[in-house]
Every structure is written in structure tokens, then in C-alpha cells.
Length: 274
Image 1: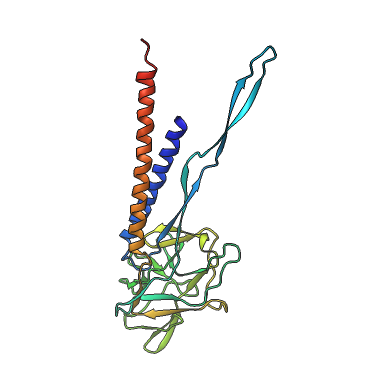
Image 2: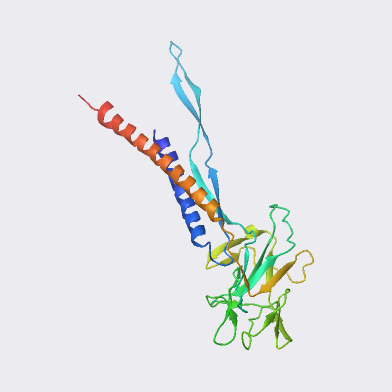
């Protein structure tokens, strides 16, 4: 009986986490460069139940009898970002840049396409990655994210400009007064599973500093100034999946309530001493 409690409860916990993930996706549907999370649900290992009973007779002995298999529940194993290209919208702002994927190699181990990112530096001098090209110039003329993280060039240096009157070519070269100043660095993750979300549109690499896509003959991309990449969240699909998760949660909840009533009856009625 208690096994049923644990199985139903694990289903409720998994669906609750799935609802939280989908809610976060929907909340970021209008966040530039946001990559929707996907849930991976896995079942716990199944158990083979057997019973022990004693045979009758003068030479009695204990023997096992197989009852069958039982599932021990489910859990959300991981959440993985979906690195599909989002739609591109025009903003007309010089500091906005959309990173458009071109030819991206497929990772041999995972079978997934790689991912491209802008390279930024946080307040602690650590390297982070983002798809959000909604940049701005700070008081000192440095090109930064909206949260104040510095955008880096191909040499790993911060980009400082005189004003917002600059031009960016499709390959990321920045021109001021028709003079080339620097080139925006674009990092390439061959295995997209090696980067994890850190919040505020930032990603962290668990495999060390990602190599630059500049000079990689197998990778092509394009930068569009005055445009932004929109979130790749599919609102209709996310709402449908959320309703399914709610129904699954309620189904497990009703099963849990049924077990609770059965235990209550067993303890207070069947087990009552008269």
C-alpha cells in the first residue's frame, strides 16, 4: 500500500516541476534570445515482487513465488534548453544585434547541432554566453548587456565606442566613421549540452571557455544590426503541455486520496478491536 503512496507522490512532484518550467517559458515568451527549456522525465527502476511461503507437510520448506513487477515512480531527470533559432524582429536601434545561425555542424556524440553565442564578461571577470543581443552603451562608452555585462571582441577585450553612430557588418566587424575598430566575438559550442542556464539570459560552459566561431570553416553565421532574435517559446504548445501537466498532477492527486481513504478504512474500521 505504501508503495502506491510513493509512486503517486513522485508523479505529483514531477508534474509540479514541469508546470514550473512551462510557466517560466511562457513568462519569457517576449524575452529576446530566450531559449525554451525542455523536460526529460525518467521512471525509477522497476521492482520484481516475490512472496515467501512455507509448504505444508512434515518436510515443510520455504519457497518463493513471483508476483510480478511494480513501477516505483517517476522523476524529472533534467531540463535542457532548446537551441532552435528564434524569429527575427526589426527594432531600428543601432545597439541591437541579432545572431542568425547559418551552417552549424552536428555533434557526433549527441546527434545535436551546435550552438552560437555572444561572449560577455560579468562583474567578477568571468566569461558567460548569451543569445540576447539587446545591447547598450554605458556611461564610459562600453558595449554592454542591459544588466551591465561587457560584450567582448575576438581578442577577449571589452568593446569601447565613441557613440551609438557605428555600423556592424554581417561578420561582426564594427566601423566608426568608416574605420574598422574591432570584431564582436561569437563562441561556438559543439555540444550544446555542455552549456547550462545561469539566469538573466546567460549561459555558463561546463567544458571550459568555448572556442571562437571566427575562422572556423565549418561554422557560418550572420549579424544583423538593428534587429533582435525573439524567444523561441511556442506559446500554443506550451499552454497545451501545461494543461496536460495539470491533468496528470490531478490524476496522481486523486490516486493519492484514494490510497489515503483505503488506509483510513484499514486502520479505523478493519483494524478496530471490538
